[in-house]
Amino acid sequence: MIDLTGVSKVYPVKNGGQVVALDGVNLHVDRGSIHGIVGRSGAGKSTLIRCLTALEKPTEGSIVVDGLDLATLSGARLRAARRHIGMVFQAANLLDARTAAENIGYPLKLAG
View: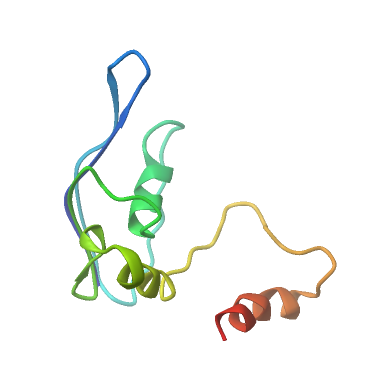
């Protein structure tokens, strides 16, 4: 289960201002359900995904995955949580010299 509550992400800009990429996002995703994140360019989709996958921390709010608030993790606990998170990219990011099976097995081999 994934629960986002009041998730905001603000980026500072050079002139001292800020860009609000996410503003108070609330979302509930039940285990086993399938969802897509769609929207116009600049709508915050990539920022939302980066926060959901713990690649970025939200400026405000919580992102709870199976009872664990990713927004509060750091160090070894964050690295451990990331090992259980994956995503499918829009463009294929495959290693050309490998077969499809080898591409699938490669991250598993790295993980041990």
